[in-house]
Length: 185
View 1 (tube, rainbow, N blue to C red):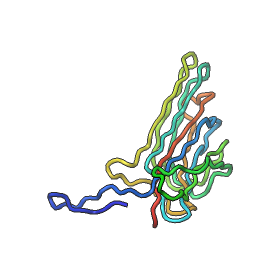
View 2: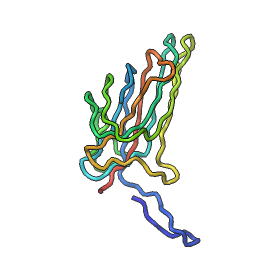
View 3: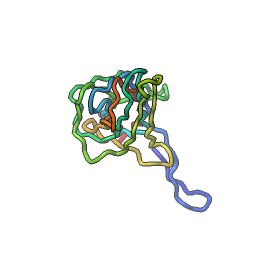
View 4: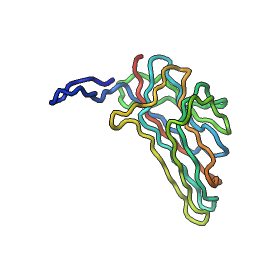
């Protein structure tokens, strides 16, 4: 939660607040085809504000080079094959347990997208003859008091979709980490 205060010039400004924050990650998700490879389900009570999402792609030596399009999307349904990555870690040990759930999927199991992509980026892989190549991109909503994606209930989801790029890499492996805050509604 942030506070509205007056600065030295009398202007009303919003200060950063600190609701309980949580982190979760998934590693070594093989890229098969266009898919939502990870998804955050909204909390059972209150709201979740996503602060940061990082996606990393690794293409091993001897694999076909290429690129993938990564996008964050709001979804109104869950992926059809979802596996929880475990209990989210509170960033403060005195925080209560998170009620949002971070999960991964395998195969082309896309939830129902509402609207268009919130953000998108491209990840490029290594050349086939070169060494293992890793590239990552961070979607950061915690600077400049940006409006973060908000999940208002357990029936809202934030999906991390990965789509084919110009040339689809073979043997690509995806990792993701996510950080969010939970607050009462």
